[in-house]
Structures are given as structure tokens and as C-alpha cells.
Length: 188
Image (cartoon, rainbow, N blue to C red; front, side, top):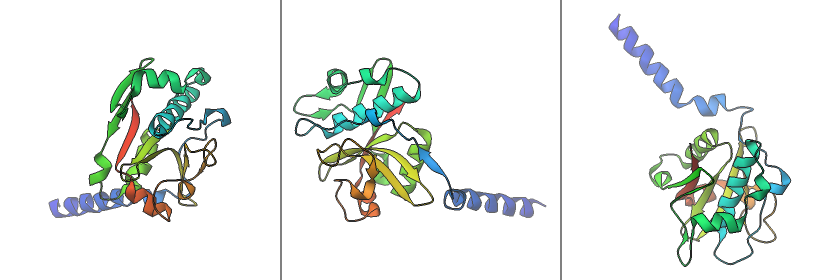
């Protein structure tokens, strides 16, 4: 009886491990941002600030708050350290933004990002320190196996695009996912 129970538990554990790929068919994780949530970087070296501003705008939008009032200047006042970049943790308007480098040790970075979007439908800021460059990742479509983001650079920014088309290093979506070594997210 115990052996049967242990076998069933082991099978259930394995099934749970593979649940996302099998159960992800038709699933969309994240959100579909309003057109006026998007921002474009106006100064060099502020990609993390702009990406974070878009994430906070989308967070406010999803809650029915006046997201247009969330601006680069406002977010910068609380989260930007001149000469250093985006703070690892800050609070603005009662909302706390945190940073994690856990993705570096993730066995499967793609799975990590899907789970991050599942937990944070407003999206997350993904950062490649080797470039360095950040974009706002806001969605994943399991049917097409496509991550969606908003880049911050003029020409690519101001709209949602597939991650594969972003300025993150790499030729393919998976190459780009593999370079991500830091994320910013909204703590709740």
C-alpha cells in the first residue's frame, strides 16, 4: 500500500514538473497593455528606468488607476541613482519595486520568465548586464511560443514587439532569454 502511494506521489510530482508545457497550450501569461502605456527612452543609459516606468504604468492601468500620471521623471525621483542606474529596490506611491538575480541560477530561464509573468501580469523588466540593456517583458503566448516586450530604443520602442525583435543580445528568442541575468518586478 505504501509503495503504491509513493509511486502515485512520484508520478504526480513528475506530472507537475511537466505541467506547463503540456498545459500551456492556448495559454497567455501577462497582459495586453494599452497603447499609451509605452514609452521611449530620451536619454542614453536609461533603459532600465524607462522599462520600469512602463511596468508601473501597466500595473496602474490594470488596477484602473490613472497610469498616465506615472512618468519617467516621477519614477526617476524614487528609483534612479545618477551615475549608477535603477535602484535595486524602491517604493513609489505605495508600490514597491524589487530586483532579483535568481534567474542566473534557474535551470530553465524560459520557464522562469513564464512563471514571472504568471505571478506578475503587469510584466517584469528584464536586463542583460553584458550588453547592458533592459526591456519590459509583458506577455508570453504559449501557442506561438512567443514572448512580447517593449524595447526602450527609438525605432523599436513605443509599441509591443516579439522579444526576438528586441535589442537584447542574441539572434533568437532563446538566445535573448539566455542572456537575461536580472529582473525588476512589483512586490505584492
